[in-house]
Image (cartoon, rainbow, N blue to C red):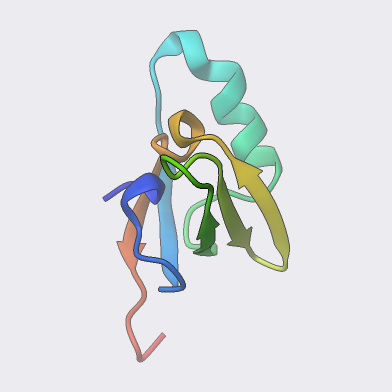
Length: 82
């Protein structure tokens, strides 16, 4: 699942950020602001209409991301014992 598909307010973890080589700068920027493996991430809100942009909390910071950026962030579930 990617960040664009995440359920509102459900904590997830970043698995990795991926995109084609034409978006390598965007991937680097996402990683620099905290979208790194195993970091907790939560979608707080979606814009209306169309769900763009998304308000996302990663670590202790909140950001607005466009859907095409959120689609680059792959997620994994947070397990209760972690």
